[in-house]
Image (tube, rainbow, N blue to C red):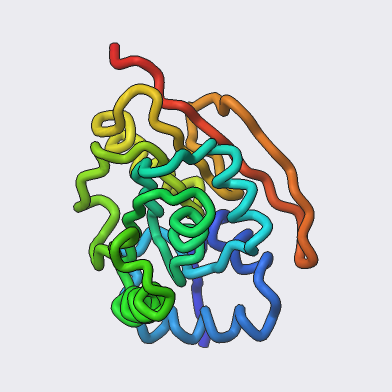
Amino acid sequence: MRLSVSISLGVLAALLAIPAPAQNVLIAQGRSRNFERSLAPYVVSPQQIVDLMLEMANVKPNELVYDLGSGDGRVLITAAQRYRAKCVGIEIEDKIARNSEDRIAALGLQDRIRIIHADIRDVDLSSADVVTMYLMTDSNEIIKPKLEQTLRPGTRVVSHEYKVPGWKPNREEWAETNSHGHVIYLYVMPPKK
């Protein structure tokens, strides 16, 4: 019997960047979970990269930071603790959303961080000052029209590893971690036409 598997280059690149034991867990989870609405696999950004993303975004106190696919909440927690930002995480996976809510509560940051358990495509982002994301190029292409239509001029969008197709980055940084090299893209939303 022959098995045919279809996988995008973005997913393949993301899987190859994950240590082999974690790849097996991710692949096994993929078989049992419904990824139809998910825009990316759950892959944690190293803390060094989170720090660089928020520094590039020039986050200021009380600005509103949205993290698309917020995972364990580390971007939100760092933004709230280090920059005194207000934060909203959007996470589609039930268990991951609950775990990050528990972590935020244990740190006493519920007054600064809120997790929305939803699909990114269904959440209003218009109040964001900063948007962070670690999705894939295909996913960035999918949400690009929403970002263009809803984000205000001057809103900073920071993408870990994957460009937003058709957008020219205002800044691009390369960083090495123990695992591998990472590229971060900063975009600043232009005036509306």
